[in-house]
Image (tube, rainbow, N blue to C red; front, top):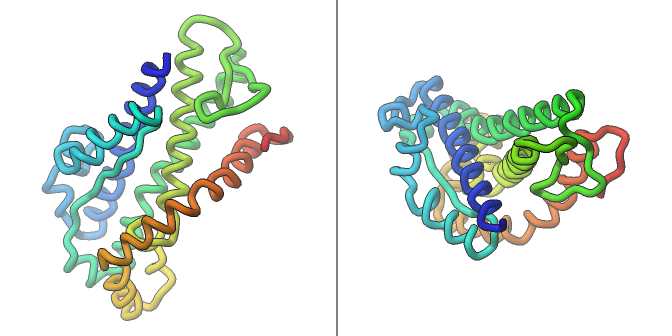
Length: 231
């Protein structure tokens, strides 16, 4: 059964990562940089995204699912650094587009969960975990759908929180340019694209993400089930 859950986590990781990267690519195209569009990234087809990041989208997630039962990986969207330097605010909107799309998927999953409860095919669980945000109230394929929506909700919430960390190389660091004058935003961009600071950002994120998400997760669940007290 754990193999089935692992396979489900991996499929949802691919789905979520593709939406995330396609959103980056679409926002860059709208902002005047066709690099990702010409590379085929403005697409929900996973193939061009996997071809660009096979280690991050295939090798690492599969290995982490086998070892931990949980996908860990990465993807990337190409962009023109000259365009980004000239238009730091447009680059910031490009950065925000990825986690914004993951938030949209969280909302879609939440709507599906609430609609299932209203329809009587789902029910609010007594206890919640990452793959059981909602329980099936009837048999058939509703159990599979409840697990899918639970995983979709959880994994995309993780991606939102992680990618909004104001640390390079995460999207939250790039989004800070929206609040800076353009000249300062350009200098800030040089700082955040330095590989040394990106490495430092990964180390800090590794330390702070778990306690941060443990605080955020029950808050979001209590919004989903308003009036309940999970935590």
